[in-house]
Length: 272
Image (cartoon, rainbow, N blue to C red; front, side, top):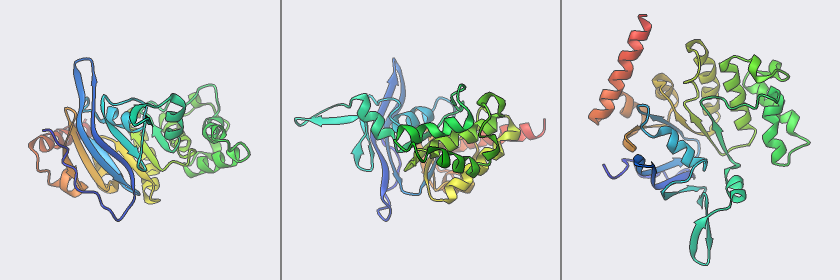
């Protein structure tokens, strides 16, 4: 499959991010091939697929944490990681890339909080780096209240549960005032009983209209919250559409096989 089956852009909403012909490989391993993607304002796009399908790599390319081997990502019509000089295109200096990345939040699988900073200090860091020093603490406390952790402001990350750490990571991402937040399987490192507290925060965020791209194995979350779902396999977007289309009436045999496997695994877990 050489083309991504992504429908035409909804022109009624502004495009937050566009990916065109993205390709990425590591040595001889081709991770992503010919990825085209449009994400509009307020959309929640869920990326699903087996491990190794390219979901995390795609998110890292969209966030400029890695560079594609070919193709380009546009954020509000600005190409990311690229500058033009004399009619030629060059890789942008790291300073420019950091500035471009400033309005894109990223929530990692493993939380990635700074262990030597308190919860409040972790959330304050982005506003301070953005020059909002006078407002950083009030902003951070308001965000911790938003994710239900105002009472943990002075705690150290190591003292928190995994679900609490991930909620702090979400607050930290929000502290950037992002136009887009990327979530890389944010519940995969959590004990099952802690998953729902993180999904509840993400569901509340989606209801506010913030644009989100979420790599996830939580199919009920995708069915309930996603505007669109993209199924990735072997570096391709195999199927793309509404949750009802992709999750309830998939057209591609590979999508159906994956969803059947997920359903079987969930059923087995419920009977253990």
